[in-house]
Every structure is written in structure tokens, then in C-alpha cells.
Length: 98
Image (cartoon, rainbow, N blue to C red; front, side):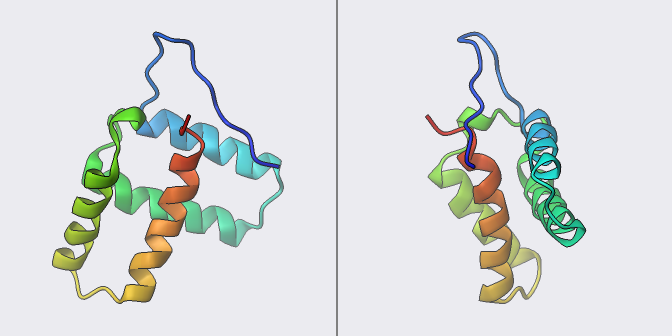
């Protein structure tokens, strides 16, 4: 069951608040503990890059491209690990798309 989180016209969803809401939904769906740990790990890496106060609606393809470059420069990350992080971040951000 996929749901979208809608906000009033004047509300601003920050990454940290979005993550909390996302995790609440995933726990309500009774995801395994391993899945919860995975989503938290993906969020942690992304939040280190953009900051927990980032406005979700400001995150765009340029943000993601720069995040990919950040991960590649930060460590010798494999393509598989990179795509794993991106998959988790995409799941979070998909909730805020219109």
C-alpha cells in the first residue's frame, strides 16, 4: 500500500520530519528489523550530505547527482552499495512527490 503524505499549502516538510513519518509508516507496515535498519542507514548517509533541515521539496535531480559524487569521493564505494543507498533514499523521497 503506497500512500502520499500531503501537507497544507504553507507547510514545509524537512528531511528529518519526513524520515520520522516514513519510519512510522514502515513500522506500521510491520517491516522486518533488517529493513528498518537499512532505511535508517540510507537516511543517515543522505542526511550527512544534505542536512536534516533540508526542505524535501528542494531536493531535485541535481541534489541526487551531487550526492552520488559525494559518495564516490568520500570512499571507494562500489556501484552496488551506491545503488543500495539510492534505492533507500528514493523510497523516502517518493512519499513527497506530487
